[in-house]
Image (tube, rainbow, N blue to C red; front, side, top):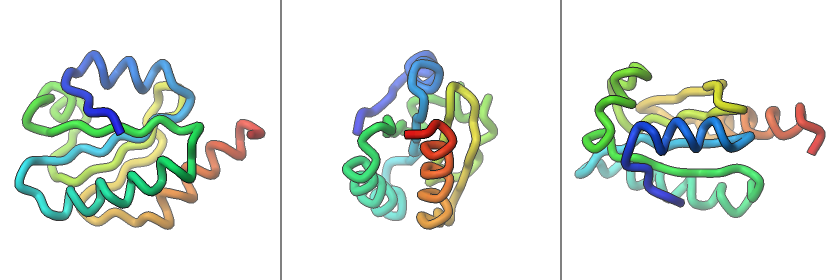
Length: 108
């Protein structure tokens, strides 16, 4: 899973990939690390989805413009548009359903 360190990199990843999942985390956040590990397992299951993460401290412009006030936060983008967001309490069943729904809508 790639780390994104600039606002431009995140925007480009969202716009240039059909499905992009971004974890926003923070240093010294144990829950963030647990969520990161769970997302790593999804990268194997959904090979057609691009997964990445960013540290909230390194991209304040992104977190500010996207109204991310707490971590962990998981954002799902489809063709550059945010279609799913979860913060603090991540429901992986709902997250996988959202990803699968996007995949199914594309007929893949």
